[in-house]
Image (cartoon, rainbow, N blue to C red; front, side, top):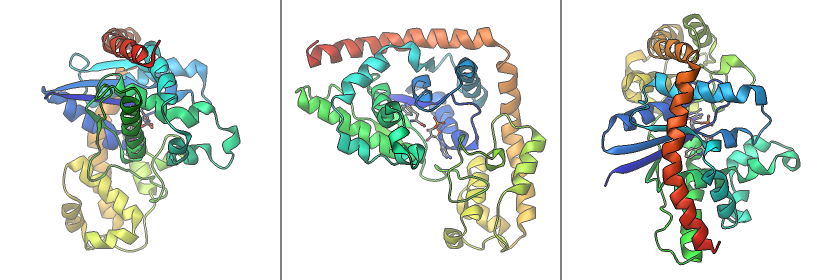
Length: 333
Ligand code: AMP
Ligand code: TRP
């Protein structure tokens, strides 16, 4: 059977190296395999679950599309669209929020992280965010969902919601429980300033991440300033367990190079960090600069980017509107 691939990325400003290695790189490989039908969604409804700047949202959506294409996704092969333009996502999310249980959502660690200490002040949207994500996936009968490691729990919830819907309404296999596609290695890229914290857009310091739009000099500077420990480069993989910054930087190097962690560790074993950092910077510049240039070129082609979205919305609507129609009939509307 052909794989039906679905994934989403939030349009919240610059995408970074974590997004690229955890998700986009995988999207491109899946897009290149003709046996797959791929749908990549710019999840703008998810982006308003936290405070956002309305004037910037449209451009952030376009920038996300530009980043998809600059990374190598072919809009002629894959459907690229924005979530808020396909009404079935909001409708489906409501129906599924009546199926999902509070107890399930209370376990979601991303909500706890994002809401911080003051949960009472978090939006209800932030809390029910994974239910909308389940609707995204289930509307397209998606079989596989490529994501970074941080989304694993949300995908398990999606499977639970699908199974409960089918059971509650006696519609065996109507909603298809999807398989997560999470890379075995390097599926969680950490901050350059703290090897125990995820690389993220919301981190205050820009030095903590490599943005896909960074210039050569910025990349070199960020790697130079990246946190390390005082020891020389590790001699074996085992040593990395207690050296999170070394593990992260070697992981980034290996992922970009498509090599194993073991090979990278052996290559730099016992050397100074500065020597490794020079090679890492060079590799990053080689991989990221062409993407950065392409994003900057595409972002100026607003009409082109909008036409991709318009085309994607039309195609996505065709699939999602059928599924939501059936879903509404099943619940009795
Ligand atoms: P987001 O920007 O939160 O919408 O994430 C888009 C995709 O990037 C999702 O598949 C995430 O799992 C992935 N992702 C985000 N941050 C990281 C990270 N630090 N390491 C690996 N994958 C990530
Ligand atoms: N929650 C995902 C993230 O923050 C984004 C997302 C929304 C998504 N809907 C999705 C990912 C559907 C995969 C499938 O990264």
